[in-house]
Image (tube, rainbow, N blue to C red; front, side, top):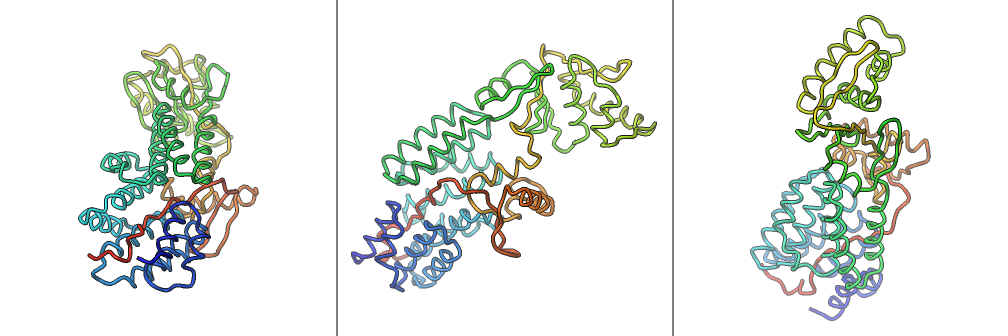
Length: 408
């Protein structure tokens, strides 16, 4: 391998894409094309990066299977960074198999990391954890090890495991500082800051206060009956009752919990649950039916008694009933939370991550754009949405300096 390719690869590993381009910008051989593609990814030009990586993969000979597999891994990260989450992972899995079979532990581990990171973004936490469990993080260079710890922290935060998240972030910070890449250190510091932000609001007996992640974890582990408006479930000591697919029943449960220990008036329940200002006998009949359905679902943790004016929640083993809600009242908080990572998202990727329809996401984005909270670039299928970016580091796309000499 010539000295310019080696120097460019080392520059990329240190987070210096411009230094790498100075050495290989005018070269058209396969290793140079691959390194140029990685450099363009670190600079944020993802379409150009993808084009260069594909040219590099075609330029490597059919016998250079490891080099081609590394290009596939690099292209998979470009897709991840540009938030193209809807495609198949078959190519990435095939690349992992080639790298693993040839003993390239670093790049094989990196392919697994990318898969876990994608699974985290689309909310498939169980699969992400299983993928990370199979990953040998010690095989990764320091910069990639820090990024892997960020994924572990992200899963822990979604699981409401504050101590696990802090430990992962501490390891990420140590690895990032050892790697000596300021932008990666800034990304870890940003994650630490996010961990300190309010995670939810607590409503109890007419009062409300903000909670951090530790507080939420402690609350869900307590004996209180928690109506969780973040995950649309009711948590009790005996069971957790999911109500994600029962929006009317969840609204009724929340209204009853907000009114507790008093009863919730029938008129208020009808107006909020059925979204009507003028109740008639049909609405009152429907309320009785829905309350009956809710009573049956909540039987392991609470009862619902009729009163003269409405209905009251009666917890079975809890001395307190509380409501857990999102920390801010913005109706589009879920979309804004995803866009807060500073990356550009397509509406289809947002819909996939949120588990909702693309049309619903488009309506939300239009409303946020009108309010000046998000910006769009591009048109048609190339349109991407973003909020003002935060410091971030496109993690090193691993193509080792031994590229040109590899043969399958």
